[in-house]
Image (tube, rainbow, N blue to C red):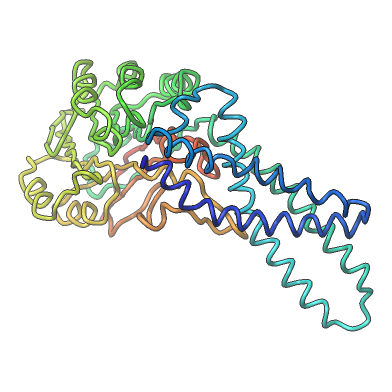
Length: 401
C-alpha cells in the first residue's frame, strides 16, 4: 500500500471522530440561537461525507488496482473536490478542537456559579462556538494558501568559532526538499529561482529531495537547480525521495551542470584563499548510516579552515559526531519545518517533532551551529500550514571562544 494512502487511512478515523463532535456542537449552537434549524440537522451528513471522501476514494482505488488512486485523477477538479477539502477539514478540526473543549469546560464551571441566567449563558456559549468555528475555518484556508504558494528567503547568521577573517560575511544558500511533483510546478519553481537571482549567495548547498516520487519530474527539478549559480561552488547530498525515485539520474543530472554530488565523501573548495570543506553524508531512511561509518568518514576529512556537514536528515548521531570531529557548521533539510504545524493556544505541535526535536531554523548544538531549512515542496499533505515554503541564506561571522 502506498505510503500516502497508508498514512491518510491511519488518521482518518480520528479526524472523523473530531469532526463528528464539532458538527454536533455547532448544530446544537445553531439550534440554541435559531430553534427553526432543528429540522435541518441532516445537512451535516453530506458535508461530513464530502470532507471525508478522500480516505474512501483511497481505499476503493487501492482495492481495485493496488496503486495510488489519484494517479488517474490528475485533473484540477479532483484536487479541489476531494484533496484540498479533506486537508482543510482535517486542519480546521484539529485547530478548533482545543478551543471547543475549553468552552465545554467553561460551560461546566459556570453551571456552578449562582445567580446566572442559564438561557443567556447557553446563548453566549453558542455564539462563542460559532465565532470560533468561523474564525478558525477562515484563518486556516487563508494560511494554507499563503504558506503553500508563497516562498520566503530566511536570513540566518551562523557564528563560527575562530572563523578566518577571509570567510567572515560569506553567504551560503541552503535549499532542501524542493520535491517537484504535480503540486510543486513551474509557477512555484520560477518564484524560487527569481528570489535567488535577486538575493544571491556565494555558495549553494542542497540537502536532498529534488522530487517527490518517480522519474517524470526529475528533468524539471534538475533544470531548476542547474539554473542557479554560486561563485564558490554548488553541493548536494542524497535525500529520501531521491533514493526512492531515481538516485543515479538525479546525481548525473546535477553533476553534468556543475554541482558536486557528495555521497559520503568530501570536497575542498578554496574561497578567498581559505580551504572550505563540504562533507556530504548519506543519512536517509533506506540508508541509515551506522556510527562506525560516519566516524570513519569524518576522521578521514582533509584539513580545512571551515568544515561543513551537508546531510538530508538532521540526525542526532550526525550532530554528535560532527561536533566531535571539529566541524564548524551542519546543514540539513528533510523536516519541511513540520509542513503542517498546529498551534493550540499558540504552542507548536507537528509530527516532525516526534522524529526531530529540532525541525526548523537555527540550533546551537554545544557550539556547533545546525541549520535546518523548511524547503519549498510537499509530502503526504499537498498543503503547508504554519510552515511557509522557505529557502535559507546563512551569513557566516566569527565567534570567539
